[in-house]
Amino acid sequence: MHDIAIVGAGPAGLTAAIYGARGGKSVLLIEKLSYGGQIINTPEVDNYPGAKHTSGFELATDMYNQATELGAEMAFGEVSEIEKTKDEAGKPCFKITTKGLGGSEGKTFEAYSVILATGVESRPLGLPREENMVGAGISYCATCDGAFFRGKDVAVLGGGNTALEDAEYMAQLANKVYLVHRRDEFRGDEITVKRLASKENVEFVLDTVPVEIMGEPVVSGIKVKNVKTEEERILEVSAIFVAYGKVPDNGNFSNLTKLDGAGFFDSKEDCLTDTEGVFVAGDARAKLRRQLVTATADGAVAAMAAIEYLHGLE
Image (tube, rainbow, N blue to C red; front, side):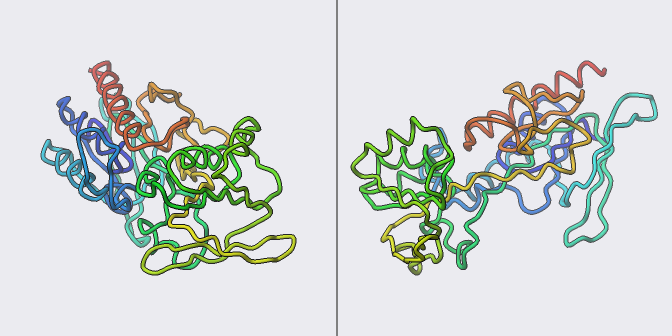
């Protein structure tokens, strides 16, 4: 039996583990893949306070080592179910069932509180070589990586508010921004569209879809196709910012706590849920900004809330 079980060992989960362990609680981290989350795919991190010119992998490794040196334990497997129950003394607790790697038989754990830090996945382009080009010109976060392409030509793909905001952000940094959208109108806020339309270095490329990533070993362009005329065109760019949105994977926990319409945990900045003893942190939570620093902030808030809850059980 652990005091705190944390599902997900990305920056939010690792921070929660650090705070939980420092709070004198026994902590178990459960991760289905590898510690670090999406940040390990970022070759350079320059926007995390106090960590200048580091890689995502190095930063995640430092967090992991700090958590485990403080006493946090690590288990690997995909959490398939969490059930609220009671221990032998009648105290409320949680039974956590996992599937092993590759679908092998998993294990069962118990904890008095749970922090869900399951993260999200960026909705991909779905083009060949996409995965191999992440960090070599393919990015899913303009505010994270945009500064590396200052003065360059870039493409932003998408038609919602995220894409519009990314294009507006990159217009301040890049020489030229191509905003590529598959429809003839954007789904995002009209006021942002008007601001972008007034910028000389922004070009709308509408009714258009990406068909091929150009360049090796780094991005040199993207081939796009007009869905009405079928005309193809190559945009010569140094970076492709994919802004198709984030995809949560919280379905296994819908019986435990409320999800919003998009599948994110329906929780505010306090990281509390509608189930006592369950807390959420990081990108899997409904929120406006999904950044490394906001994920770690959530981890700290969730862990301190869990510690306060545990004190109430004593």
